[in-house]
Amino acid sequence: MTAAAAPLPRLGAWVKLPVPESVELLALAGFDFVVIDAEHAAIDVRTMATMIGLARGCGVAPFVRVAGTAPRDVQVPLDAGAAGLFVPRVEDAGAARDAVDATRFPPLGRRGASPSGRAGRWGLDGLAAYLRSGDEEVRLVVQAESVGALAAITEIGTVPGVDAVFVGPTDLAVSARSTGREGRTADLVTAAERRCADRGVPLGTTAATPAEARELLDRRGYGFLVLGADSTLLRQGGRALVDAVHATSEAGAR
Image 1 (cartoon, one colour):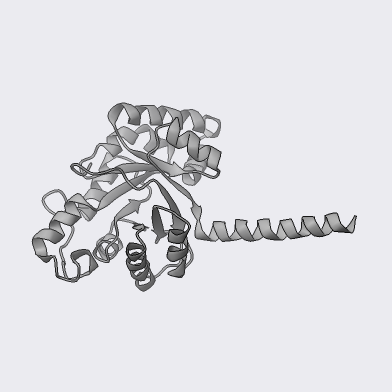
Image 2 (tube, helix red, strand yellow):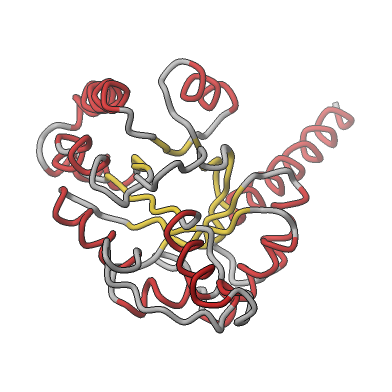
């Protein structure tokens, strides 16, 4: 983990819609961080960079879920000022080291340096401050999304340069189904949580309801949660409003 790193922001949301205003709206809603989804959403580099700048201006920590650990995947969001990365499909300690290698400056990794971007305050910070910020402030969150990754979760989470492990429930459910362990998923997650607590590995995951969020934060040792996506929140809010109007109309017709 990053030396002397503070806890990650607590409550976040995925950004799936390719419009910067989503970030502003989530900030106004009170979220602590956003995760701009460059893995599954159709968000281009220009829009992503704009979202990062807007999030910083709104006081929300901007993370980016990258598609992989190729230099182009990680270099652009980091130099655009991302607070950190979510790296998907990290199966073992070797894959975690690959993520560190791409994200961290030498000697821990091989990230290229360019302080002339937002991460270096457009050159104002100079090389030393830019390198220090990248080493001490940028967070690397690796995603454990399979039965195998859960089994190796403490080895993954204790790789130097990794700040936290995010348990991805959707891909985990697919993995458990494909390996014949579908009915044991909850037990596998509970065992992984206990091992992480014993080793001091910070954990994050998703939560679908306030009750689930409180359970995860207060009793199961999670330090940060993603509470949904901008697209989901829009759909759910719209559906609830339409259903409420229908229910009122039907009640008045009786």
